[in-house]
Every structure is written in C-alpha cells, then in structure tokens.
Image (cartoon, rainbow, N blue to C red; front, side):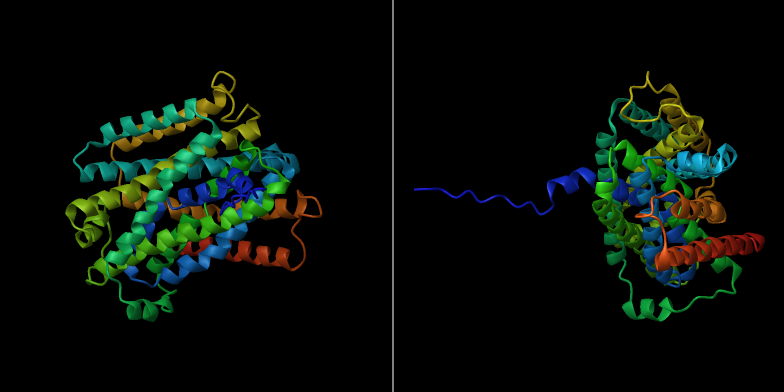
Length: 416
C-alpha cells in the first residue's frame, strides 16, 4: 500500500521571505516620529482637510521607490555611486550633501520623539538617549543586515497602534466625507502643512536607503517582482498609519474646536490618551511613537553611512566587521551619538519636526530630478523608463517636486 505525501503549501513562498524586507522597512521608517507629529499637527489644525492627500500620496510614493529599487537591483550600484558614475563626483557630492542635511534633521527628530515618550513616564531625556543610543550601537556593530532588518521591522510594526487610536477616537464618517474635498489652497498655513506632508512621505534618505539595502541583502534583477510587492504593501501601510494619526487628532482636538498648535509630544499624547484610558493610552501611544522613532533612527543612520561611502569609496556593508569597514561604522556612530547629545540638550520637537519635513519638500527637485534622470539613462533598455510610463513618472516628479517647493516657500514666507 503506497502512501501519497501531500506537499505543505506555504501561504507565502519561501523565496519571497528571503526577498521581502527592504521595501516594508523603508516605508515603516517613512512613518517616523516627524511624520507622525506632522500628521497630528495636520489633524489638529485642519481636521480631515489633509486626509485625501495621505491616500493620494500612496501611488506617488510607490512610483518613486519602485524606480529606486529597480535602479539598485538592475545596476548593482547604490544611488550615490550611480550619480557619481553618470554625472561626476561634483554632482554626487551635491546629492549626498542634501542627503546628509535631511539625515541630520531626521535623526534629531526621531530621538526627540523618543525623549518625548520618555517624558510621559517621568524619564529624563539624557537617560533615554543613553539607553537608546547604546542599544542601537550594540545591535548594528554586532549584527548582520538580515538580523537588523528583522529587529527593525518588529519595532516598526508597533506603529499600527495608531490605527487602534484612530478607531477609539470615534471619528464621524459624515464629517470626514464632507471635509475630504475641502482644500483651502490659498491659505499659506494650509500650504505649509501640505509641503510638510509631502516632505514627510517622500524623503531623500528613503531613496538612498532602499537602493543600498537591496544590495546589502544580496538581491538582484530576478527579485524585482517580489520587491515591487514588498514596496507596494509598505506604501499602503505607511499611509494608513499617517491617516490614522491625522484622524485621531482631527476627531479630538479639531472636533472640539481647539484648532491647536501642538507644542510637544506630551500635548499630542494627552489629546488622544483619554480615549483609551490613561494607562493603556500612554502605553499604546508610547509603543507607536517609539516603534516609529527606533526603526527610522536605524534606517537614517545606515543611509548616511551608506550614502557617504558610495561617493567616498570606503567599504560600506553590515556584512563587514567593524575592523574591515571603520569609516562605515564610524559615520553611523557619529550621526547617532551626535543626535543623542543634541536632543539631550533640549529642542522644540514639533517646530523642528514640521520644519524638517518642509525642508525635505524643498529638497525634492534635486532628489527626484536625479532619480528620474537615472531612470532614463542608467538602466538597460529592458528596464529603462520609456513610453507612457516615462511620461507618467516625469509628471509625478515635476508636480510633486514643484508643488512641494512652492508650498514650502509660500508657507515659510507667511510664517508657517
């Protein structure tokens, strides 16, 4: 009597599990502490009038990051390397300079977010910085890319706590529907937050990170299909989190007529904690904000170290021992420790966070311009941007970069 062995069918093919990660991770990092604060400010000041923008940004975000991973997988080079080889070292250093400005602002914002969470529990900022910086340094100096990716994704998934917060805030669907089409585009303060939301979603360091991460993970052209799915899922997740934060503050602060300008993380927390109860509310908020800040801190510091290395030419892989790649680990550590020292000294978190996101929007013409030109010039014919899709990507780049720059300048001149 013969026995038939029925193969076990896995819901996700095993080779997919080896590929999935960089897209989801960079998107979880995209919903960082600064992005959460920007979304909270948007909901508090404008209710649901910026909610439609969150969903409109999903396909735009996907198009940008899909082109990024395509460049990495097909060429086998990082973003800085490609700019250096195609346009020269001068342009490469210009691009990396904008990257470093964005990274420094982002690192300070993430660590400030964690300091704000610590304050909810009476923990001094300096103590929180010692613990966080020490743990991240230990993890990166001793781990491989894959182990760090897994740990960072676990932290990032805590951001989904904000979906629960939005649901418990009890938003009114009719009110949301009524405000979805309301966009006071002539109001400079509204435009300032439009620019901040653009900069909170499309960030210079995301492009550098994902292109370098797929290489450090050892992926290639054969992994393009799964990597696209990874990126698409991440694009939806990150904007669902952003929308949830906006809905939560829109249903609380704005709905109560406060029209609040949030001054710190504690104000944001206290606005939404009552809907979950004090203890549970603080824990849920802390989990969401900490998850967002930790994953973004790891990603941004790695991006800075990878980006500079791609132009400077030093060894730059988490698969290298610190003795083999001292500059890579050194740049990572300096960025992290420097940010921790600055945050321990005390900064205006919300003002800094929204300002950093607006700065990201102002940098979009440079960042997206290089990305688009590489998509036209650096890829083999089979993968190159061409036809109607090249025109579509071009329109997205011009409109996103142009409107982000215009809105940022207009809002900044008007005093935000």
